Length: 571
Ligand SMILES: Nc1ncnc2c1ncn2[C@@H]1O[C@H](COP(=O)(O)OP(=O)(O)OP(=O)(O)O)[C@@H](O)[C@H]1O
Image 1 (spheres, helix red, strand yellow):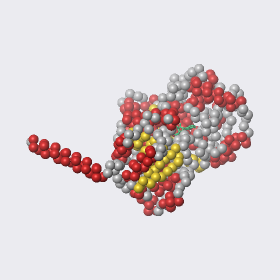
Image 2 (image 1 turned 180 degrees about the vertical axis):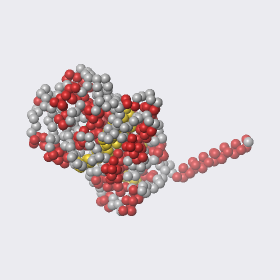
Image 3 (image 1 turned 60 degrees about the horizontal axis):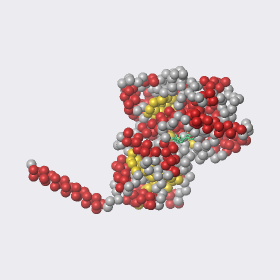
Image 4 (image 1 turned 45 degrees about the vertical axis):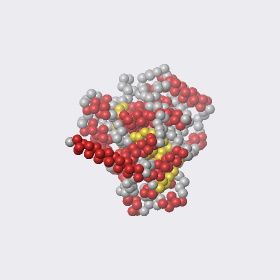
């Protein structure tokens, strides 16, 4: 099945070191480009930029051309040729310079570019965006190995959020960035972070800290970071050191089995980090780059205390802070403004809108029983095309749906907070490899997780907020692919559905007239939604008729009573 091949492709975590082969592929492609390449004129450049980049996050054009005459400045040349020890036979090849034609050189270019992807950037002294990764070479002393790692991982052109965020971070600016799900925010903060750590090779110890709300997401960021830092050495002997703050690493740090100064970058969830910091096993006072991924989650009531502790432990005067998310509500922006120094705000597309590549649909099910019937109907009508993720609002409900679908002999498993880390890891692996077709989960997997080929997201329960909706459905339609999201709702969801309809409207979905009418939220309703009062208790998930449940219960009671009687007779 094609879709599983796609999914498997996205999943491969352990990457074979085929850099040699890869480089030659990339460069030969570039070479053929180069034969047709004359120095682009202004008009050519702008014509290039004109193409609609708003939806085209992941352009596949090859941009690096190997040439022999250098157009680099002295400092750039130095970085490109000195950066690290020779690593394989390809090295000699790679020391050749890149042909650099900056795409964005002035405010007019920047304006055109921003218009093309609907980027709204505000703040003081805003640096120009980059129009290609080439621009990093001309404008910053960009590390050659890092650039090679980007190309080898098929990251040939920056996405809009990368165009904006990378130069901001490299100019040491504080950032609040909001861009659609699946639009490349991870690389938008990883690329400049790695470059800055390389620039600061003299300082020993922890300099970069990335905070993520869940272990799964922290792990994913760690894997991306490892890929990009492949073969980067800070000096001849010392490779760039990156760590995921796992349970075992935190124990080793606490027992001083590992020197806390070993790592340049640490990726962690808030609780685990605070635990090691409070045990004086990790010093954050030298951290210079602090990144909050899924920032709105980290600043909501679940995490705000720990996030605050982390902030107050990072005491370096030159600390640079960055916040990234697909949703940044205004209260989080207020917090950002209060803790950041002269921040620059980057919004790509419509703030709080869903990714435009996702087709969104609402299905009215009448009542709870209707939802199960709707799922079965999707199967019958051929719309239930795996890989699929189904979101529910609680562990109990996720378990119940799992049992129902298991009963229907579906290839399904479930992830929620009660499953062990190992179980969660294994299920994710099976889902990514295509062994598992349908993944049921709670909001633990709603944010950040990058399953590339997910075909369909089903909201079995209407999410509690517009933000939760945007993140949940954002598990499909990633990396430029298209996807579908279906939200099942019942009579009792009439209030909760309104913010979702508004997101659909903002994301350019066609909404029927009746939706337009019901989506208007009164002040009172707004308050109720804010207080979480838009949701009421849901009925248990089951298609077994009530009378049968009662009969079963009575039978169990009779068996218990009979056991008790027998026990009493024996005593
Ligand atoms: N420049 C690029 N070219 C091609 N693919 C890219 C590029 N940047 C990122 N990607 C790919 O796009 C996918 C989505 O990226 P990422 O996970 O960073 O999205 P995100 O914006 O953080 O999403 P979310 O809001 O859900 O966390 C990933 O598979 C990533 O490898």
